[in-house]
Amino acid sequence: MLRWRGMDATPSGWGRSVVTIGMYDGVHRGHQQIINAAVRRAQELSLPSVVVSFDPHPSEVVRPGSHPPILTSPARKADLIEELGVDVLCVLPFTREFSRLAADEFVHQVLVQRLHVAAVVVGENFRFGHKAAGDVALLGDLGRRFGFTADGVELFSEDDVELSSTYVRACVAAGDVDRAARALGRPHRIEGVVVRGDRRGRELGYPTANVELPAHTAVPADGVYAGHLVRSGALLTAAISVGTNPTFSGEQRRVEAFVLDFDADLYGEHVGVEFVHRLRPMVRFDTVDDLLVEMGRDVERTRELLT
Image (cartoon, rainbow, N blue to C red):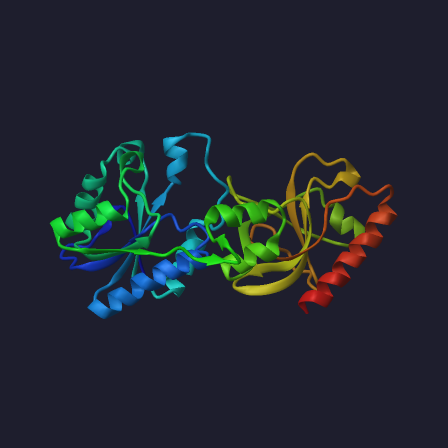
């Protein structure tokens, strides 16, 4: 898959294409349905498929301070989109100036002039242009003017719940990683660099990887989880703690992963942390011995569930 940043990265002589547009944060099953429809349409027309996305999140530009928790890092999102058979990911820098483009200007400048669009496939609730004035109906009208088709894909629902990034974020925030995984089609993963912490885990016999995360990462609710530490593509079974470590009166919220049957030095490595099951809430124990007993149970439960 080709990866472009900005419209200036479009190769000279670029021909016609099939385009789908959206933030696609999380690339959840609803997103997959839309992207898959765009890929199929491109195959029918023997044209390349293009996903157009944005960075940073438009809400942070339009309403500073309102940046939502992010489900997938830019690199992770690109990899997930590539797995769906997309030919090109084009990430457009979302600036204040860009946000002021009228709907018809966006279509003309981005879709027609640059991507030479033959077909657009989006979710049926797709909005675009200044103040989100454009919708699928307008996209169809502009398509008839500029010579492309526009299709709105019905949104994906399951158990009377419409799957969306907002829904997945709510599941993650509540610690319901099982529901989040069902919506995503895979466990929720966060990514960051392993940094030195208090080294208390090693002293207690449970050395942990303390993962420093980028701003706005969608971190699950405080608690202990069974999951994986992802290292160079390998899934390593781990018991994961999210919280402030209240037994030791901690103040900084951290994500720490104890990798079972593993003792390599991970400092400085970029890793992923996947949350598969929530084992329990974060609890303050009266003594360190009580904490150690519960940590042992966490590890054994993780082993039972995931190995």
